[in-house]
Image (cartoon, rainbow, N blue to C red; front, side, top):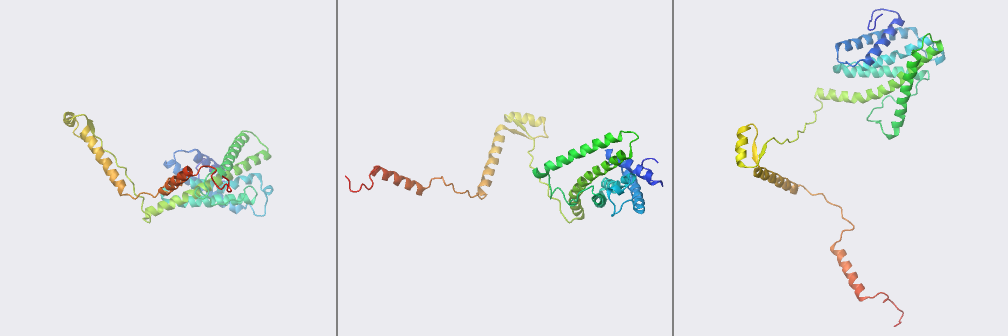
Length: 310
């Protein structure tokens, strides 16, 4: 079965097709091309078929542990993660919010399944950049998570190079893929929660519920030719009729006028009240200082109460 083919086939073939398509979508940079859009839609159809078959075959149960799941069945734990990822890559902007919300549901289903088997910890599914921005308190944890992700990718690449691996190694490969997608899932849920408010804001703008913020256009000074004399003004003015010319005196007068107008405008604006400076000298403090100086002049040091001694 070729990659992208959605014709009837065995569950094994369908999963192989979906896995190959997901890899193609991850590596594809031409996300506005019709070929890419067709690939995304075809992969959604394949994954929908797999999801129905997996549900009917009861691969996973609430009463099982990880040891009860066969090695070959482990691969199908990724179906919901693949569905979340592919829906997230659907760039139909008219229906973007619908696909994003669907992606969130699939990611959550995948994460809940991994929690059930002890592969993932319970997390808050509603975190976003506004409520939980990257800062000093969580930057170290995020950097460590990034390192763990890279190490897991290197481990998978190394294990998949081996030929004729035993079941234990194959199981380790499948579990490593699941753990890698748990990390991706948590990252993408964070991104989706951050994107949803922006999509809702755009919907309100399109529906007329909100008015776009006015665009403030800065005042741009029109170009002109600066010349030294009236004679040069007449010469350059004839040579460049599309540009105004201005002598140095005219330019000086224009600038003076602009500065005067700016100063007059500033005078009309209320001045901010400055707080009193405790070290600033006032008339009262100066008067006290003068009185103290005079007193020291007329009362020499040691002239206090001498107990009737001469």
